[in-house]
Length: 148
Image (cartoon, rainbow, N blue to C red; front, side, top):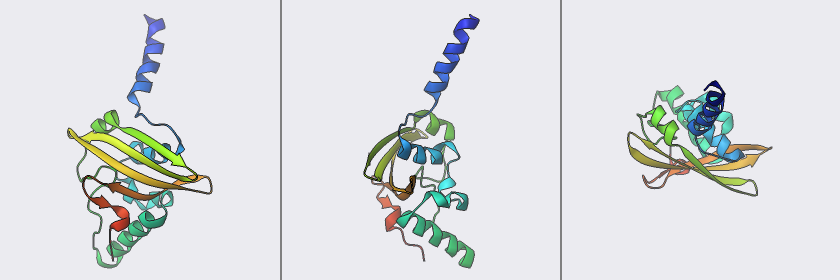
């Protein structure tokens, strides 16, 4: 029985991790594995570029200057409340990359509701950075948000 336990434990560990492959998907996986909500945290700002970074920086300035909150939901989950266990167990990341640009689609369920978040990334100096985040079904895209 002990001889079987090790291999079974290894298989269970592989099955328990979210399904994703590729460096752009790994960059997005960070926002689901390291703590949902980290996309708005200043410590993660180096993972962004372009319109997404500009919006997050503007959101920080609005709060610092006027205590105005421009971003009131988690971009990675399209919501304020989430079940991290359910998201982790259902998360799938599909990556399409070509010539320094990538789209990673995160599919998961949260409180039994399916979600699909599209992450647009660009490669800068060998690192994938998030340029935009969207939920087309919900009708939002970070690059279209305005925070003054």
